[in-house]
Amino acid sequence: FIPPYDHKYVIAGQGTVGKEIIDDLQSESITLDYLFVCVGGGGLISGISLSAKALSPNTKIIGVEPEAGNDAQQSLQQGKIVHIETPHTIADGAQTQHLGNLTFA
Image: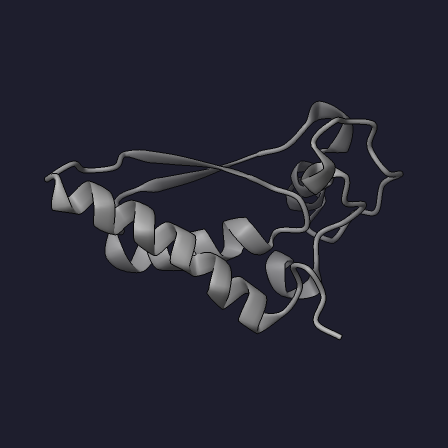
């Protein structure tokens, strides 16, 4: 079983999203100052952050999540993975209850 976000291959795969974004913009001579990425379990933002920092090190990565499901924000503030109830949101990818061990590291 491969978990949906807390696995090195999933994170690596999600990194291709960041690579495509950076490659496309750089091919048009566009510099990306900020990249806003949704946060569920953390796999997408982890992968995109890894590739973006390698290809565009001055780009700031900003994680976004529903106010009702701000487990990532709480985890960063407390310095540990915070578990929450399943948030009520139409954004099903943001209905995670906590970050993963790899994605929080």
